[in-house]
Amino acid sequence: MNWLLLYQIVYITIVILVCLRVIYDTRSTTKTLAYLLLVVFLPFVGIFIYFSFGINYRKRKMYSKKLIEDEKLDMRLKQEILRSSAQAFAQGNEEIQPFRELAHMLANNSLSALTAGNEVKLLINGENKFPEVIRAMQAARHHIHIEYYIYEDDEIGRTLEQLMIQKVQEGVIVRFIYDDFGSSSIRKKLVKRLRAAGVQAFPFSRIIFIALANRLNYRNHRKIIVIDGHTAFVGGINISDKYVNTATEKKLFWRDTHLQLIGQGVNYLQYLFLCDWNFCADEQLQPNKQFFPPAASFPVSGNKVVQIAASGPDSDMPTILFSLLQAISLATRELLITTPYFIPGESMLDALMIAALGGVRVKLLVPGHSDSVVVNAAARSYYDDLLHAGVEIYRYQKGFVHAKTMVVDRKIAIVGTANMDQRSFDLNFEVNAVVYDTAIAQQLGDVFDQDLLHASPIDPQLWEQRPLHKQLLEKTARLISPLL
Image (cartoon, rainbow, N blue to C red; front, side, top):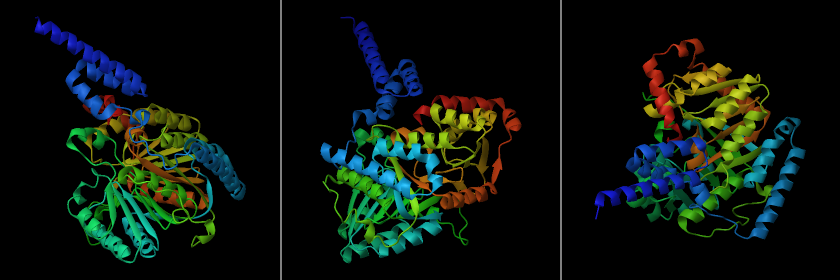
C-alpha cells in the first residue's frame, strides 16, 4: 500500500472539506478569504485557528437561550414593544424625531423598546461610578443582579463582595455572573466566599481545557448591574481598582465612561441578565412584577428617552454594529467617537468615510498607546483612508482611554461595552445604551472636548511620511485584523 499517496488523499480531502466549511459558515467575505489563505498555505495551523476562532456561532446557535419560548407570547411582546416605542416618540421632544429609523431598527431587530421617563446619570471614571453603585446596592430590597467581564479580587472587588454578602444576610437575592476568562483571578477564592455566604454565582461559560480556544474567543464582555428592577448601571468600567484614579497613587490614569439608569429603560438590561442567567445557571427564571416592576413604583420620574442595543453569538444579527451604522448615517453635523480598540471592518470604515466626505465633522479618539502591539498596528492601518476622507483622529496621552462612546450631533449619546472592532461586533456578548437626549449628549460631548485637551491630533501630511517599515508592519497586521 502506498501510504504516502493515501496520506496525500486524506490531507487534500480534509483541506477541501474545511475550505467548504469556511465558505459556507463565514458571513464576512474578508474573513472568509483570510481563513481560506490560512487553511491552504498553513493547513495545520490554519485549520486549528479556524475551528478555534472562526466558527460562526451566531449562525449555529450554540448559545441559544430564549427567556420567552412561547411564540404567541413573543408576538404579543413585539406588538407591545412597538406600541410603547410609538408612545415614547409621541411623548419625547422634537429632537428625537431625526433618529426614528434607529429606534425602529432596534425595536424590530431585537425587541428593544424605546422607553420614556428615565433618569440618566453620566458617570466618568471609577471614582464616580463606584460610590453610586454602592449607594444603589445598599438600598436594594429584593434582588441585585451583577454581570461583569472583569471582576478582580482587590479593594473595590472586596468592598462589593462584602456588600453582596451583607445584602444576602438582609434577605436580598444576589445573583452574580462573571466571565470565566476575564475574571479568572476570582475563581478559586472570591467566588467560593460568595457562594459560602449565599450569593448565587456562576461563570457565564466555564473554561474547560478541551474547549479552551472557543470559550476564550466568545467572551461575555457585558457590564450590567440591575437592582430591584428599577435601577441599573451599564458602560465600560469593570470592577477593578485600576479604574479608580486617586491623587495619592502614582499609576496609569484610566479614562472610562458609565451610565446609571432609573426607569423603564432598565427593563431590557434585566431581560438580558435573565437570559444570560438561565443559560449559565441552567434555571428557568421568568418575567414577573419583581423583575419588571410597574413604572409607578419607580423611585424617581425622569424625562430621558432610552433604548438598549445588545448582541452576541446568540443573536440573529449584529445588532450593535447595525445600530452604530444607523446612527452614523443619521448624523448631519458632528460625530464624536471614543474607542480603545479600533478595527472597524469594511462597513464601519465606509460609513465613517461617507459621513466625513458628506460634510459631517467626524472626530475619533483612540489611545496613544495600546495594550496590544498587533491590535494597535492593525488599527493604525485604517488611519490613512480615514484621514484622506477628512476624519480627525486624536490619540489620548494622559493615560489609557477605555471608554466606548458615540455622540451624534450632540443630540443622542451611546455608552456601552462594545469596542469599535470585529470582536465586539461578531464574537463578544455586548450591550450599549442609546440615550435620545440633548442634555446628556451635550454633557458627553463636553467630556469628549475635555479629553481632546489631553490628546494629540494626527497630522495627515506627517502621517503619510512615517517610515516605510512601520507602514509595512501596519499593513501586515491589517491582513489578520478580521481574526483579532
